[in-house]
Length: 312
Image (tube, rainbow, N blue to C red; front, top):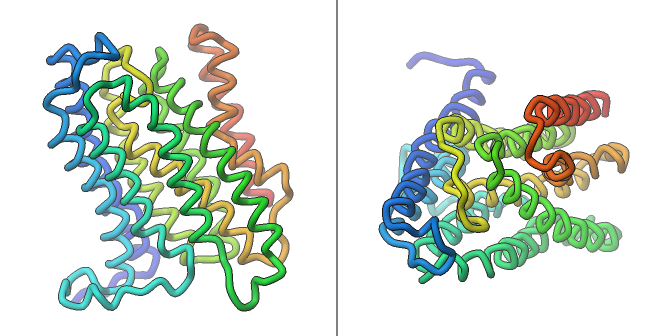
């Protein structure tokens, strides 16, 4: 059997596989928009959603499966389903391997089950925040050796809830605006920054974030070819996957600080944690116009965030 280097293995396991499945899942999720347009659902927040269940659920499943398959491949379990039950969470953060795909599937399933878009819009944000709070509670380090970190964990849970709510609302505003197709790129930059910070302290966690980065890359490619259409809150095609991966970015950033003796400066952590919110603020201030200035401001923001991570 041909031997490949460690770097090539990481590339295949953590970037290529999640990217391919993210792209395939994104294509299915994008069909929700077309089916909604055909049924007239996008024209009214009270018109029933029709024909989106299969595409929404399958698309969400495939994106989430990319994260799970990447982890199973890294553990050398993927080729033998009979021993998948041997999977175990050696650290609390590893539960994200299942909890994040669960959130993505939950949103995709809910989008197909709700009677009207307005009902989905009403509880989508609270649902994401509640699920995200649960992920923070489960995945932050705890137990022997971390007894003195309880106050820091509580602060991170509070910050995480705030960041998830604000980032979720900001990504929704960007996605529903004239430049909506670029919304996944905001998340992509945030994940690259989180991965850069995590890889400095905990390689396994950093590699898992790379898998999420790969999935987001596949979604970005799909998004570039989607038309900019006016839709209801959180009803844009890739919302289930993008919002779920955003929660992963926030939770992973918080978790990474517990595995390093000297965490990065607070301003760097907060800049990365609230990066989608900052991008949304720029978009709001420019009122969805002045495309050149918006692109320049966003590029400067992303470059500043990446530079801060490199310097950390």
